[in-house]
Picture 1: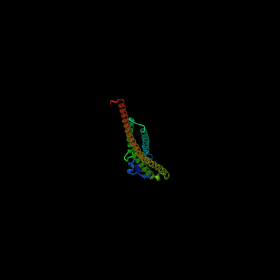
Picture 2 (picture 1 turned 180 degrees about the horizontal axis):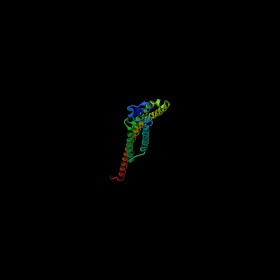
Picture 3 (picture 1 turned 180 degrees about the vertical axis):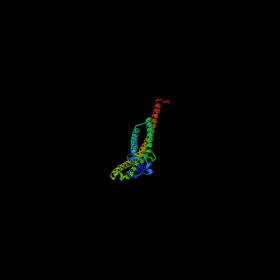
Picture 4 (picture 1 turned 90 degrees about the vertical axis):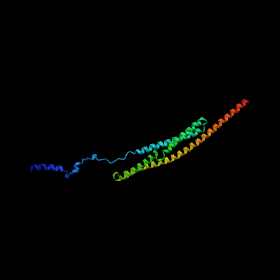
Length: 213
């Protein structure tokens, strides 16, 4: 009897903690502290935004440079002749190829267009995610975040308009190059005509110098 009284407190201590019984499943599960509890998932850094801005900047810079190059070639052609005209034609061909490649970036399956779409989708996803956390984050805080993402949406809209304007600019520059090619052809014809006239003058002069011919 005394032995039973000694064991009984140990048995009760093993089966009850704080007045609450411990089940077999609870005994098998590890006890986790508050520190080990998983933190709420944080949104990824907006890498899409940086990539979007970088590609748009590159596109705008290349378009501006091409516009300058086309204008420069067109001006040079007005004073070129002979071999320099052939050089001008090579420049026109190279510029046309660059413009075609730049225009290809505006196609739906091209990296630039896909990046714009990807960034816009990222913004929409963030808006939906943040909007669903009004209760946990606070209404005022969520409204501030929404305004920021809406500014990003406006940024995308502006850049899309630039792409549309850029496509028209590319078409216009290609038209200028076509006109430059026509001018080159005319200059070559004129240059050939000039060479023919010079040969004729030389022939006439040689005949007058030697009447026996």
